Length: 80
Image 1 (cartoon, rainbow, N blue to C red):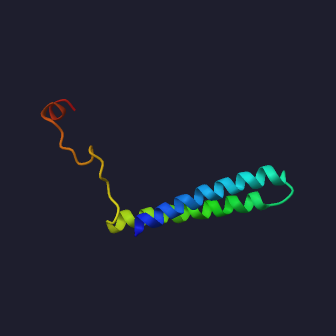
Image 2: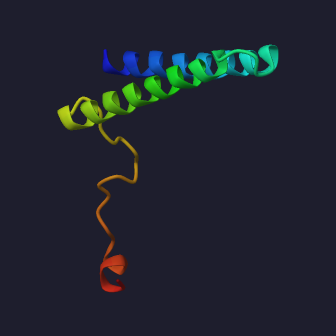
Image 3: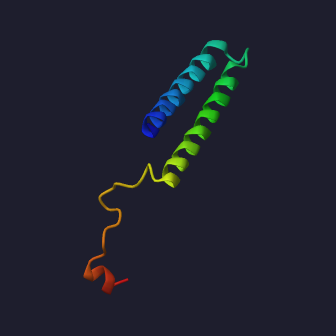
C-alpha cells in the first residue's frame, strides 16, 4: 500500500509540474496560477519525503540493491 501512495504522489508531482508549465506559458505572468502550482508541487514533494522516511523507519521500505550488505573480499580487507 505504501508503494502505491509513493507512485500516486510522484504522478501528482509530475502533473503539477506540467500544469505549472501550461499556466506559465498561457498566462504570461498575469495571474498567480503558476505560483499556486509551485506551492502544490512543494507540498506534494514534502509529503513524498515524509512517506518515504516513514516507510524506511517502519521497515516497509528497504534496500534491495545487489551491492547492499555485500561482504568485502579478502583483498579488500587487506588493502584498506
